[in-house]
Image (cartoon, rainbow, N blue to C red; front, side, top):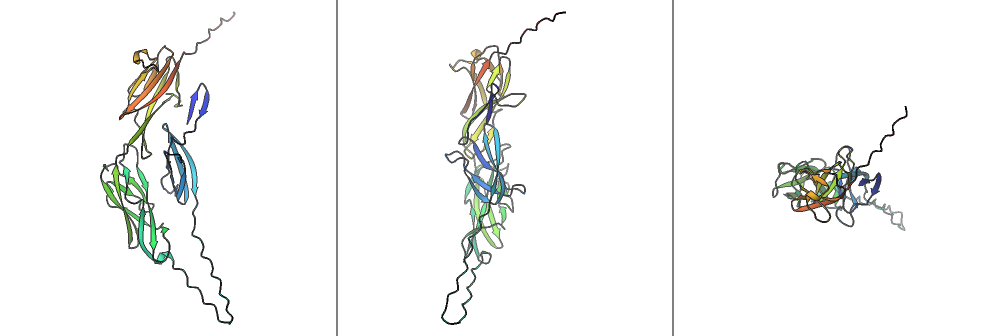
Length: 310
């Protein structure tokens, strides 16, 4: 994230604090990868489906994207058997070919197994990628690509019939579930998806210039900034709670609003008065508070114009 302070740009690494996600599977981005968030390995990706995709990092309401190509890894080739030399001209027997997986599919394992996704929240869309692995009688298990996917209760969550991407329905409620089924011919595998409420982890606050939209944490007397509050959840989702948060302004010494050099509305709009000082802007949402220091500076003085000689 870039912050503009006194015409200078500071770049701060936020890898560990950012929320990492992968682009959903689509005709434009047929690939898919998992990406770690909220730990020392934040940003580490693992390819799942071959193809192009995007990796997203969200911090403080800002999102950056980076392309990623997942390269398929094919099975190791079966070595050609070396003919056994014989002292007689007896022909070497032809090796019996290894049975192909297509002819011996016994069962299907759906991944992830029984799991949960958070309920849909406002404009936030909750998704989960499902994969199907075939178990064979005469061959190792392998990822299946010719799967027909279905959901037993689309009012809870639907699923793309060809890609296996599940999407939580806006009508879904915590505690409800649906059975996700992967089918190839007459062989099926299932997994139960249950909806749960995501847990709030923190609230972050940042200010932007109302005209340019550039992030800022300094203001001149009489100036104005729009502050935003972003809620972060344990499922790596975020939510803009600016209009729902309770906003306040104090001084670093703990003074009340009348001695603070700014005023603030319930929507996070800050207006600087005539006093130059530091203010602490805070937003509280569901018991979590995010804070940010705001420096109020004197407005630059205009130079008097010299009278022209006539």
